[in-house]
Image (cartoon, rainbow, N blue to C red; front, side):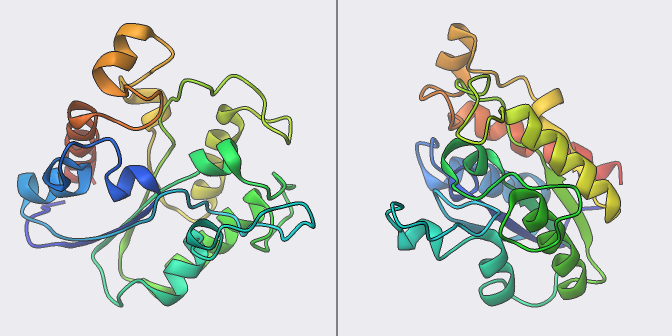
Amino acid sequence: MTIKNLTVRFLGDSITQGVGASEQKYRYTDVFEAKTGAEVSNHGISGTRIARQQKYPDYKWNPAWDDNDFIYRLENRMEEGADVIVIFGGTNDFGHGNAPFGEESDREPDSFIGACHYLFANTVIKYPEARHIVMTPLHRETEDAPNSKGKVLSDYVRAIKDIAAVYGFDVLDLFEKCPIDPRDPANKERYAPDGLHPSDEGHRLIADMLARFIETL
């Protein structure tokens, strides 16, 4: 696929917003735009998750995060029309989401599995002519410690890949193929100094990988 002049819309969390990059021009979406000549729109919001969060009595609601889940932005914020849609999320669902992980049969957005199905299905409805790409979460420093649902990050990655296959989405498996892995101290210093968000070099890696991936489609 020739990328130049394509309209590419990104839906994501803090990494897509550009956290970790020293300047906006170094975030992966901007690097991708400069490299390829695509027309990019960035819908990344820090702290957000794919799943809708639960209003439990002891949960302190954070409007910036909890009112702006991926599904809400797809339905209410993203512009009509696109050649390519890139969805990059899941790490916050693992890291600090309160929604249950869910079951294979879930289709509603109140669990992670159900929300992935709901998001992907409605992405196809909103952008029926677009190429749909999912990028899996990157490795992160704390990924092997089970969260409050008893899940590790690889469980979320596996679910994303399995559900993407149901909808025929293309998957760029950053968890498997991207060299960023802050569990290694030297790697962390170079690519993700805070253990999660990519450095300028990390953002460039993601942009380069995505550009090469789309060119093969």
